[in-house]
Image (tube, rainbow, N blue to C red; front, side, top):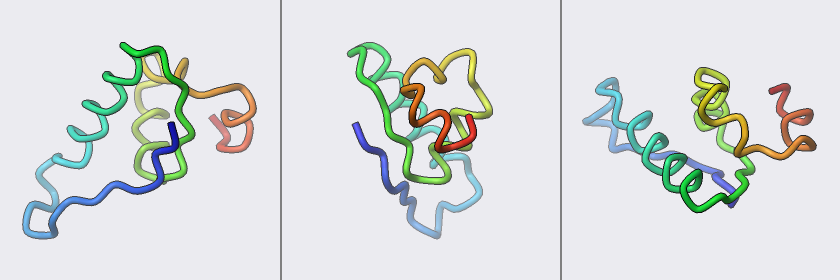
Length: 68
């Protein structure tokens, strides 16, 4: 699954909604045993922040490309 963009309405900026959205998506993909291609910088940031939970979603090739 390619995650290429995260968008939250600017009026909700700074409230953590983008991270919550990404958590929901990544948790769902974990449950379904999908792999993720994190093309969105913010998705990659969340995966880097919580590698113990989400790093398994990323293939070895994509880990190398993203420096994960």
